[in-house]
Amino acid sequence: MFKDNIFKKVQDKTNVDKSTILTLGEKLQNANMKDEQTIRNVIAEISNITGKTVSKEKADKIVSAIINDKVPTNIDKMF
Image (tube, rainbow, N blue to C red; front, side, top):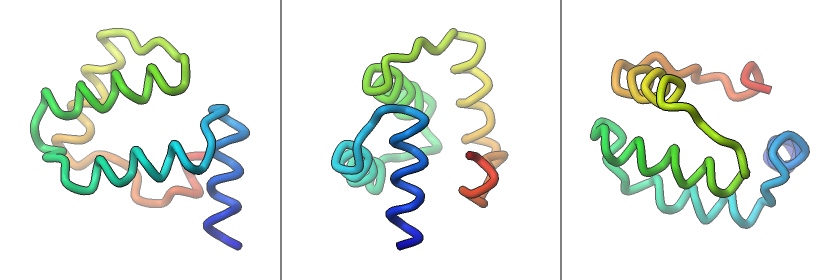
């Protein structure tokens, strides 16, 4: 139930369904998330999936946060 609630929150906020989220998650499991180009590719893919534009400045901040381990670990606080 908890997992479905998270998927529902994400879907409501982004219009991305559970299946797409799971497919993206599978791709990310083996991705090198310390590699800048990999992170930028992920940002571009998520931007495309959600239909939201990510500015270069925002992408730079996201890349920096991920590489420097500054990403929140509590998913509930993100929504």
